[in-house]
Image (cartoon, rainbow, N blue to C red):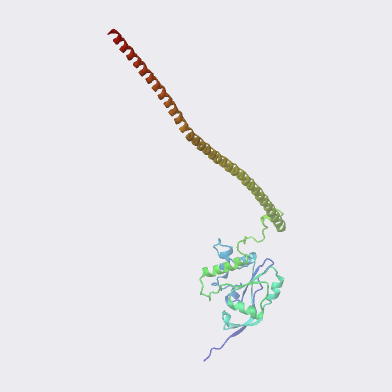
Length: 312
């Protein structure tokens, strides 16, 4: 025996949560029965959508937020929330997407047209993305991402993994990294009466000045470098000149020494010759003397002989 199906016609109970500050539109399929009762998007007690937003944008807060605080948190951080389905048939009062049959989609194109700051569309399930493609179609100029499903029915990921998935998606469109707690506060520059345009202009001027100063500094350093190179070249020239002079002087001195030695060599034998000559002359004079002495002796002996003969 087959179970009898109970089919209810339902119309979306909530208006889109959106304002002029919205930068990303988060789309689901259709509110669950618990969300109907709690009068809030993702209002099921075990749905982690709002705890994830609180963890990302109000990490220091430990207490649970009220519905109005949650809506305010989303809007202050540039997040718009809506669903793809406007009216549907729900089977057996089930909150599963598989039990929903779309009768009419929401006019999402018109919402995007009226809120031009929205540049990204995120889906909280693959089913929501498929319904969007079917009933709305692809719209150019938007960033599309499927977030990890915050539904308690999706247990394949832990809370931390889902949190990280949301964090990465928000970071990719620049929602994280700015001051999210007070979007309506003016920036420091604006509080001093300086517009963003003026700030950018001033920044560009400073960049140009910095560039010019850098170029001037480079030119000066190049000039100085060239001067130093020239000085170094001159010094090296002088050193090489001195070195070559020293070498040439050394060579000339060596040549002079060589010449002197050669001259001395030539002179030495003449000196010896003179000595020999002197020696020879000395010898001859000695000989003469000896001869003289001999003669004198002879004479003396003759004289003595004659004397002795006379006496006899």
